[in-house]
Image (cartoon, rainbow, N blue to C red; front, top):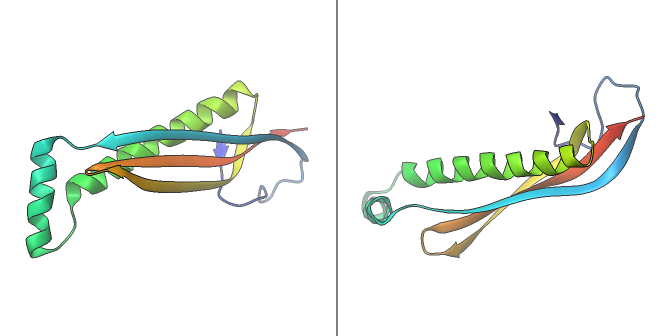
Length: 105
């Protein structure tokens, strides 16, 4: 599956048909111990590695779910991919991936 965050396929002269918007989402959270340590990090500053890892994993899951939805439609690619995130509760975040599923003609 070709994944692009632009609205065309570079170097391709093949026409494609838009199948519709596809998306994938997940809500992830860290366990109490890592959340507590992340809170302690606010005292000294710097990257909160546990949350970085959590969001990376969440993006991977959301992307996979988006690709699964596109494959179910028979898509060859997903164009104009975007990611969004929001805090759902203390220590938990939702990540959503969405784009336009297309099929080569």
